Length: 98
Image 1 (cartoon, rainbow, N blue to C red):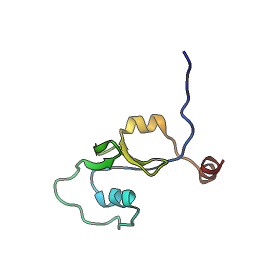
Image 2: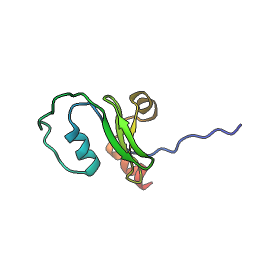
Image 3: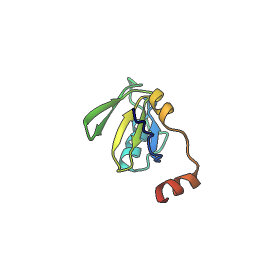
Image 4: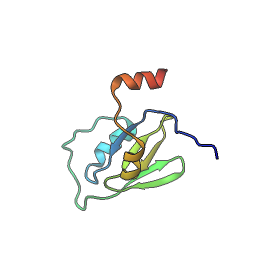
């Protein structure tokens, strides 16, 4: 049976804590939001993300990823840690332009 390896790609991601949806909203729309913005009552809570497949839920601890074509999607923490690792700035340039 043939085997395949996922091509090395670099993505942007932020982990959803369940408390500051301003941070996640800023990540998705690309705006800056102060980290000390007020938190509504009833948190932590899930965050709902519009993806190419429809609306998906990101629970506290999940990561929200911006893919290589700008698409946004949530990813469970265990899957994220098994699939992604931090990248040095030099490696980002090589991967995206090499």
